Length: 231
Image (cartoon, rainbow, N blue to C red; front, side, top):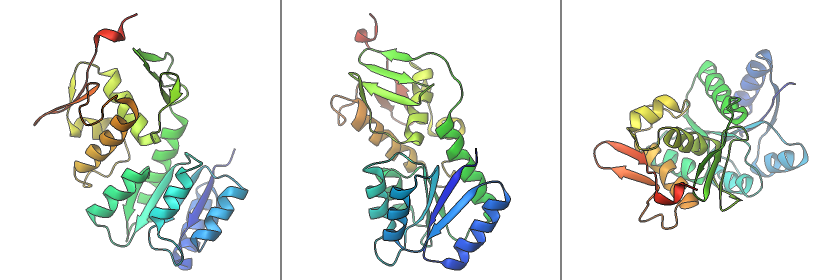
């Protein structure tokens, strides 16, 4: 089945170029030039991924992303002409799956798009990981705490899964970047910190004093086993 991509960008020349390029690579593509048109399009016909520009004429991309995340976990690749670290951090914190500064090559965008779509599909990994009240299901790519779904993005699920599969072992930021493809290597390791903060907010009883995902100063993070994991 052809995967459907929605582009929300007021640069009509760029959208047309991307539409032609992605269609040539086997995707179904449609485009909207305003935030309101893009949100209406997405509500009318769900997409498999959204390419979202930060600078739009009616709403900025961050607000659009918030509205998308209010009702959908569709993968979102954000574009910006600014390329500033602050914008990347904000986008990732709100729930973007990846971030690509302009100008970019169509080949790089295609690679990133394929990466977030692969993460959404996920590998056919059997077995639910259980840690006390926390369940991590690689098959459905879902995490649950006390039986309730955790509010994390696909990218954050990948980080959580990588940490859980290595429970008790310290993983550096570089190791997490290697395991979770798609985070831009030069997005400075702080992008990992943002994702970890979001994960903690979803799985920790007290995110400010985490007991599950623990920071090891100067080394990275460790997914800590606890006494209540057994049984």
